[in-house]
Image (cartoon, rainbow, N blue to C red; front, top):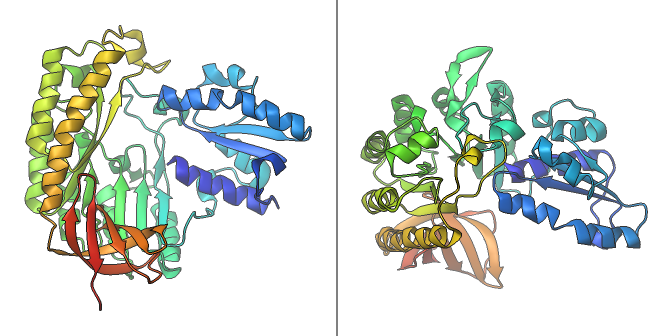
Length: 403
């Protein structure tokens, strides 16, 4: 979502006749698009203070603006570093003369993969999360507007479409409530063209049977799903204000894997949440061993001001949080490698998205596995067929199959 916002900010600045500076020392305007989800991200912004002061001694006309997700209580602190701290819609209105940044045509970062926000904000109020306070309540885009954007992208040759939302499967268009996320997905599926659809991130609480059915029948679904669990313990889930149980989560995974057997599954999890005992953490360990994820994004809990969890006693030591993260990571390494070994010898479709070196390319399989391919051809942005030759913990190696 932050990358998507930055693409829209870049487009707005371009429409106002701003040109990218070749070097930061040459800039007359610096816009920082920040994220407040983790304290470490906020700390990085505070860490820009010295650098920005140095740049202002080089160019006295330099103007600095902070936008994106920030808490109101931090605004005065940031104003000591930046000339202005403004909402992204205010920025867009000033430079692009529009009231809603989601209506801006982005300056896409490449020509084959695109981020398409379908909603902004969230109504869930998970006890550890600042999103409802920084982005506000859930607002969904008109499905006709979304379809128009994607049709345009497909005509331009984009091969990968990412649907974005803080809780993507909460999507519903207020003017026509019958258009939920499952129906929106089917509409996108029906757009002619050779492209893959991915989305992130859904909440397990309302991952419907209708949606599973739509994904299982889709020829364009990327066969990859990030399904955040956050904890494998029911009491911790309740403290997190996550409205599902471990049993419900496991049952959902079972249904998804039954209907989409070749799906790859990743998750988000927080270790060291306030009050998390060793026994409760062991329940998360058990879940990891049982689900056998392909990938997981493991975060050590850090308090976020204004959230319900920030009022709880942060009673798990930093050392213990690191230990718990490493334990889960070791389990993940084993399950990820086991999953990847199943691909060896198989033929996969790959979208090449990165040039690693002169003749080495990186791409993603339909299940969003990273694969390395050697080729003297220019493969960037192309779909190719490859045969997997080696399994690694975090990816694959393969050879291009000649058409």
